[in-house]
Image 1 (tube, rainbow, N blue to C red):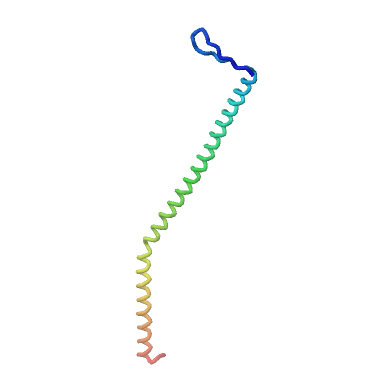
Image 2 (cartoon, rainbow, N blue to C red; image 1 turned 90 degrees about the vertical axis):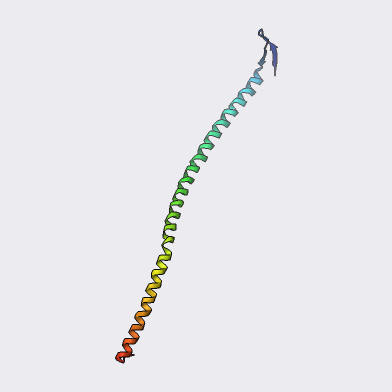
Length: 105
């Protein structure tokens, strides 16, 4: 294993690598390329999952809006049911009175 640092003619230091160092640098570069590829592909998976989640959230928000609209109608339905109950009670009372007038039990 050899690595030499020599000054060049322009005053800069020139580094020359031996065969083992070149292999190490090549392996490191390959590792970095593989790591970059893995990072990009994993980010694409995360972005795809995020898009699916966003679509699901949009669906849930739409369902919540529908439920809110339906719940807004609940007080009106309660009032209608109360009116029907009052009318039913009034009808029962009328039937009792008619039966009493006609002598029917």
